[in-house]
Image (cartoon, rainbow, N blue to C red; front, side, top):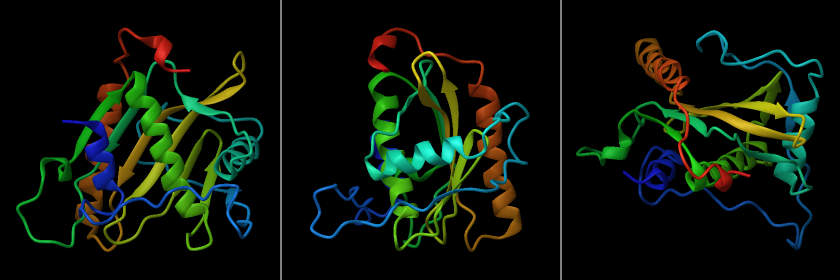
Length: 212
């Protein structure tokens, strides 16, 4: 199954007519406000131990992500060994049957797929950090955004590469929680956490030059 099909469905619960709006260009007639990206607290208590790391400067990732979303040269790329991507089952408002990509899915994305995923994450986080969103919060090496009914929460884990002076996206997780029961939330988190644990030991083979 094509990864882009899965990600497009995740933009709004999988309904065909819902698409992620494009990132506003710097040449728009009215200057956009600065993306709302702050240093705060992300709930990572449900993730496997070792998924995130402490960072000395709590503001460093927030500054980089803010510049990235604003188109001001933030250095965010796909990690050299690919990105662990996992999504819970879609929370949908339409009637079944549902397409296969509506199911809970996980994979380590590599090469061009990983680069495309970084672009998708930028579009998704830009919406959350925009004037109609609830903002993006970064803590240590992770950033998160709150979803709503039919729209999943997003958790993105980065790793600072001092040699290339970039932040590499290591893990990207989409978990539906809004308006769901505690049982459903627990099930969704368990699937994603188990996927992270299983995929952590895998790596991308071939074409490492595609990930810059």
